[in-house]
Length: 312
Image 1: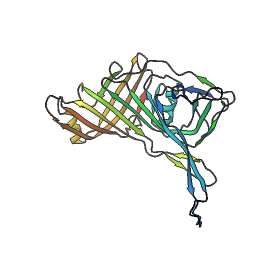
Image 2: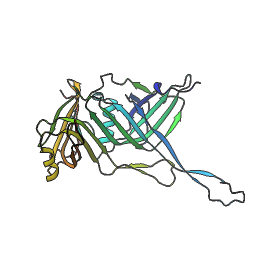
Image 3: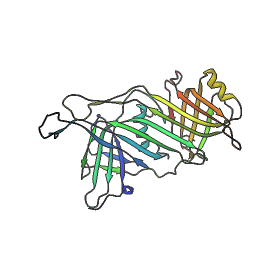
Image 4: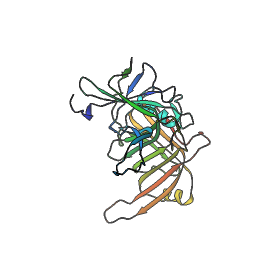
């Protein structure tokens, strides 16, 4: 057995029907990812025995959990893809007619990392995983990147696949860029704004739930969904400043993708700007508006965030 190479790592996901339980004979979906920090954790406490030799007599496990991040370059997944499964977990909702809105139905997944180790591979499985955070970043002249953060029950390590497990290949579409892949931007109250960067981070404020008799978490509790973002815009008029100073609500929407019917539309139907800074930093520069925003509940869509796939 040689030293494991990170570039040969496989990461796969499957939706759970029972929290914390991987389905039998699972059909895993391989994920496209650029990095990860998924880990199985153990909490320990040391003995408080008083000894004449000043040593610690024992260290014992008192709890456990699973957590970590998945980083990715955004590409189109499509119905039934691994990416759409992760979105369902974060949104606490199911896709309906190619639309998903943030909801209240928790959807957990099993995540499996496979490390190629020659004749005996290493399978690192994390169960009861629920997406806690979802973020995207769009910057002029760059590809669109993002991440998911998870919290879950616990996990295990094995040297064999689950009996009957199969693995569906990940989609192979192109990585979405922030030039030809960014379109349909609209911000209520602004006319054809020229945006240099746009990003958001949404979080579910999850918490692990512990109980007597179990090392692993016995559940994952959900808090409020909080969605914040930022944008950089070239200063052309006072429209954005007016929205900020007057506390006026707005809507924000944009579409990501280069191929017809292989795009995602992100809609935040009600936002308010929380910061807005405009300064002349020095000579020979464009004046930029740096603004922060937060999404709030919109009664018309019964959500604060909506994603549509298969957009033309």
